Image (cartoon, helix red, strand yellow):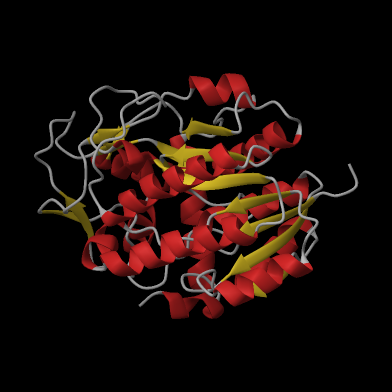
Length: 347
């Protein structure tokens, strides 16, 4: 197949940039759209150092309908679209719900309105399940009322795509519901680098270990879990990136059973916050100082995946360990501090 041009929206973000690397490594030509709201063009240099290629980049806010339309008119030969671009903090979404609904849904609507490819991979989330009744969580688990506006945008996003696929029979889409991505590329050229105070556990751990945070906040120790702290399924970001390539090939090769499918992506194992802290200390030799604080609104007790469907139908499985993930995140953190160009992020 001569045309292997893939659009990756949010392609300079954490998961997006690693997926760009995975795509290039498999021979795809990548075009990136990003509005740089939570990332920096410096990521392009990291991608180039890893792959030897610099992807085509367009700074576009997907909420701007005219610019999205113009982009697709000029790029009418895309083989596929992987849509990451969205705001992703549960806590922030509770404080700024309208911002999340506008950003996460308007961008998706504009892509579907003007898209020039019949293959779409949608970045969804295990948050669509809410507080699940049964663990591990399978794709057949009921979709409960979302615990946050962020989770609700993922539920609504899936509904929009499903309805679109129902009337557009030639359009094919996969929603990937992933659990908790962590880690960094083994080269330490790219990794998770949030602007301002981290909302996710691992960058907060690494910034505390390096001395940029006074202590690590553990939100709640009274959950009904092994040690009272929330349990999550932590998956290495490169395992996740490779799953997106597998899902894309699944569509390109016509292996889909229906033109809208969903898959869980995780390791199938849950670890508590305290277990992750101990694993980080063991993997890196760094001692962490943490304080237990009140629960955060929107957090659930436990979530880890049943990944049998993705293993069987996509031919994919997570292969990297928790310790490997944490060690790679630590190597990335040390590199960020070593290079002055990254210091502007740590506010």
